[in-house]
Length: 349
Image (cartoon, rainbow, N blue to C red; front, side):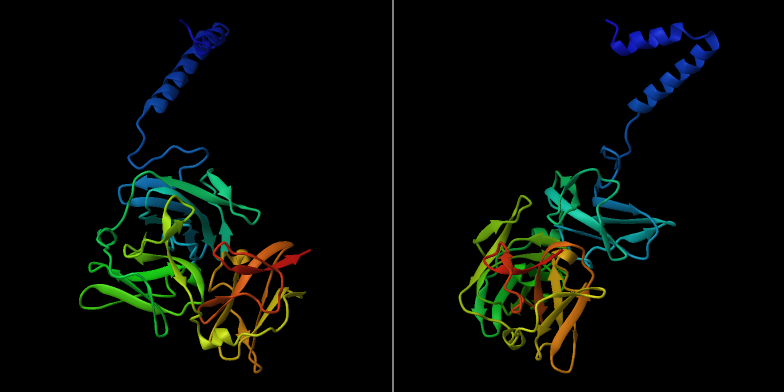
């Protein structure tokens, strides 16, 4: 039985001369062969783009455009602006291959400090701040042998100076504990390895419930020695440790009210009184909770400040004082942070 397409094609051919029919027939044959040709080994089908690509070595991310630095930040590296830089390929090409576990992962490119969704990937999800994140789905797990060999050491326990985290990963080159207490940083709390292949670190934590994972040679794994878990929002779980008594740095304990955020020339002025601190950062929804993007400067009175250019809208934030996350004591406006605590909130007209 003729299809609608074949009937239409016969009608068009009946209106044309022999020469034109020959050209059209050749074009149709060419298109048919192109449609039937096999895809390259690493190719994927997507609407409007071919990024990312699932390969035998991992997930290949590609960005095309003029830039000095391109980084990929996502749910797989807890939105770090340092963990996964792309390498320059050709004049305007950038790429990297990441080993990602099975599941759905959200991400953005950070191009010279500017956050943007992947223009070659039509799959997106709401980012919660008025924009979108790009989304990639990985059907099969891709991980390192070191991450596969992680075994139980001991559950986190409270010791002098903080909470002791341990991880047995004798074949690993680098192990970090990343969690809600350090905004899931892959750099803030690296572990040290002993002769038995046990990695450990003491982290000063405040009272409350804290979620975390170990990052073993770039692979995120839960703590096999800790049975307490919580949904991580991307199809897996995070390990959970509950701290009954406050354990934090003296600098963080001494933080006091300075002044609430206010609009000034150039943006919004954030201030924090922490005379004993060595480093204070404001991290929030406006910078994807980065511990590096908006560092504050201290004056002779011990007041830390920074001006952040912000548009109209509502923003959540915290101060990170020597690695300790605290709300702004000068700002009574707050919102649940989803982890048993709260974030400070500022609303700009």
